[in-house]
Length: 215
Image (cartoon, rainbow, N blue to C red; front, side, top):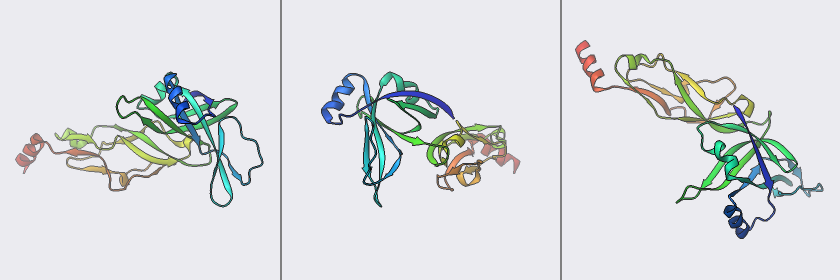
């Protein structure tokens, strides 16, 4: 997976008025989840933008609010690629992945971004683009290839997640489908339903005609 460098500014004023002012300045409010888990009551010191969210069993997790500029995230958002984000917020540097984006319902401007801190030990769930390779025998016989799932949901440590899930379709016959359960990728757990169809070679009128003549 490629790496994307992003710089953010800690955000301490979380009110609605402050958010409106940020957006006027072409800044986007964002949050970093998945931070350090601590015992409560917390006796340490929180940095600018950090807050403590209470969990169960007398534990809490440190969440960071920050802002990024619209220009800085353009190539991260408007792309089919996925990235590991080298995120710098003030003096804090972490690796993260983009988990969610909220868009304005009318003009599609970015309203909010959610990032998740990652490391080389804790698995993360991400959607990864699918890339088909090879020459299907069903297409050679006159069928039409269709890709039903352009992305698959995988679970793995972020360092094991590839830029693409490459699927060979050489042996995909006429009228046949390839399902999630047919696929295996080393170091990855596929999270989609096993019977979900990823791609298929559909019968065309010409292929049906050729089959009929052959019979």
